Image 1: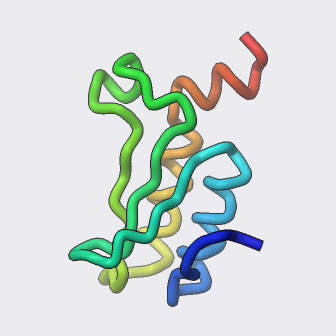
Image 2 (image 1 turned 90 degrees about the vertical axis):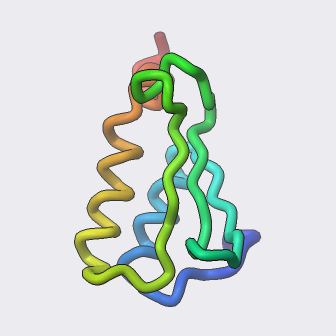
Length: 87
């Protein structure tokens, strides 16, 4: 079980659980965005120097597309990919 507040959308919550299973930190902020996701490495080499940090919206226009976008951020993270391969 996660040690954080659950997202109201089941699809987005599933994407957040996927991110956590890949080592990402999910923090519910309770401000404008529902929360943020942080890459486990958080290096400047990740995502062209922008770090792997992504906002999680509370009520996106399309929850399915937002969940897919969150998974895509995790899957396209160069550092997470390197950690998976063991390099």
